[in-house]
Image (cartoon, rainbow, N blue to C red; front, side, top):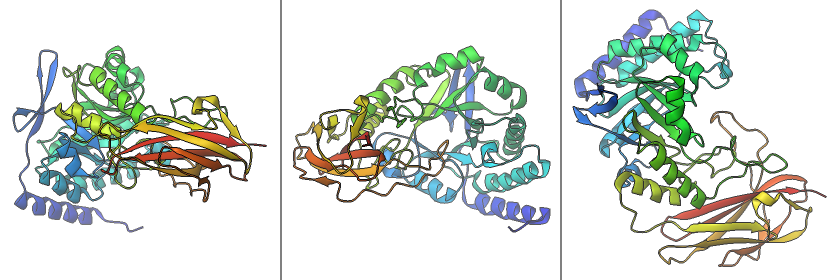
Length: 428
């Protein structure tokens, strides 16, 4: 590890400051309060955030009616800002802050000081970019934390930002919210301009939760989406049951309309999760896209919610996935090496020809927490045979006992897809 002196930090900061200040001009973003109503203004005009978490496919965000991107850190920060500017989007720029659950010690004053100086350089680097909307200080710092000094550090970071950048508001992103957290924000972190909350199944209750907890200021929903794997129904062997892409589409629509669209007096907008794809418990749980970049029915819903218009060609709809005539909630057990019929039932609203692709994965044994990296399990080869064009196939159960998950991808030939999976257990 290379250690930088204070002089080196100063030189880096000055270089970053001069290189950005010469070439770009910031757009002022502020929060105005009129009575009990809060309004985010950008360049003096009302700006309700219709955002996507993740910087993949910025062109599709714009085409769907979205207006902003959220990042979790400054990696490739200039590339993200330039891309956003190209498509008329803004960026809620994340600032990576040490997590207690990853070993960061907020009693270590030198480490806290060094972190502040590192972030100072990042702020100087990007503060004048015209695509910058606001700063997100850390992500889910409250997840499995014990030391409340983290909020003192967040407050110091916010004060530093305000000293260097009077044009962009600050926030810190929480994993859910309760009265204890709100009390900490008020007492230890009064410098932030708005509260940012990540929430999934609890999104419909968020406005009331904030009110009960005593938060009277503005807020933003910085992650929201399907029912999380930690709050979903599970099998007898504790495998979480994922919603199909069609079930997710209905969930996204109802949660947005109930919890975000109707609470604009304090809610400044939101960032849907995830505008891209990632492995987190499964390869399909949180992404609105597949690894191939295919769009699910949730993307159609987001276009409708953001723009008021459905796409010209919609994604396929999936009704059912079965193994041996059973669905996920029936706790499906199979015997090693034995063959079973599988069936996926779907349709296409545009009457496009549908193709079916199957995949069998073992359940991951090493999983992350709070979005940490997870390796995608290696697919089981030669598990599916006799696949037809109408959703029928045969599954040969693996010889090794344990938990597995069967996936189906139904494609319409127009880069649209429906997804579903079914967990099952191989047992003698």
